[in-house]
Length: 210
Image 1 (cartoon, rainbow, N blue to C red):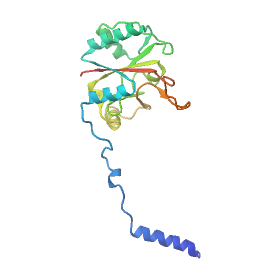
Image 2 (cartoon, helix red, strand yellow):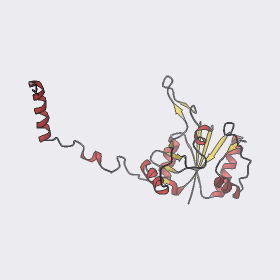
Image 3 (cartoon, rainbow, N blue to C red):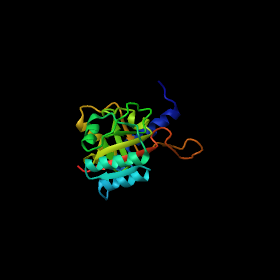
Image 4 (tube, rainbow, N blue to C red):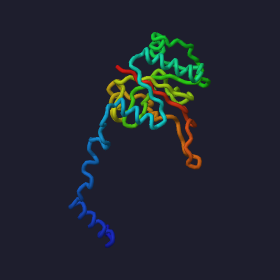
């Protein structure tokens, strides 16, 4: 088949380009090194600062007894009566430390929901949750207030560290992995920021030493 002069000219340029390839302009861009600056302070401080910047409410507890006391004080201060918690281990832990309440079975009508988490991501101030948790998919986004209870050994610096941790704990990844980064917010209407439209209007994180 006869090749036109214009097509032959294009093919010639392609052959020349392949013969003398241009070096990659950013040779480090395809490596495994992190694109972000490493943490310069303790992960607890890093998470607390970034979480608070996003309007999250952070509290540090030395042990489970202090956690139960702070939770009881929060519920009394806010006058919350209907607390949802679907995690038996978490309810048992709180009960053992004198946090005895009647949990509601109605997620839709609760004042707040208590869950644990998979990991806390210090760099972004995010709570990483998955469908493998007993609380399931909906609790952290459906309740008007989300209260997360986590331990210091669940703190990681970056999101990739959290994903790696989940892979190491389980044979396969859960069907859902989500990041909760502060209260729900949107600026869809006239670019005005509104909090609590598509999810919880408040997010609390109680971090315990372990």
